[in-house]
Image (cartoon, rainbow, N blue to C red):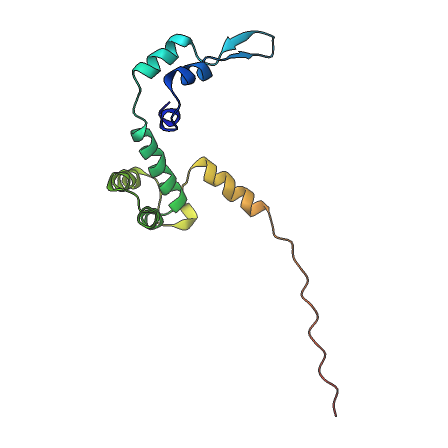
Length: 136
């Protein structure tokens, strides 16, 4: 809702979007969210900042794949100090090791690594070397 509000969408429009009737596979029609839940969420919004900060810190740890890499990503992308603090705490608690052969990363990155290893680039045959010029 914060995103919709930031885009200038009013509460009435948000309520209408979130309580629209959607048909299901069996022919029934229900709303995306119960009207009472939407009204409650509009009256008492929750802060999403802490959740976003946790996600960013997780992404940095996983993308960095090594404590030094994660710190470099945090600094090079200009992350605020609270994100860097979360990153440092996650690195202290994480199972990431210094040995690249024993690297432990999130399941998503492991899947990407497995897929990358299975995809081999096509080999292009090298052209034949040029013939030497004829002797004069």
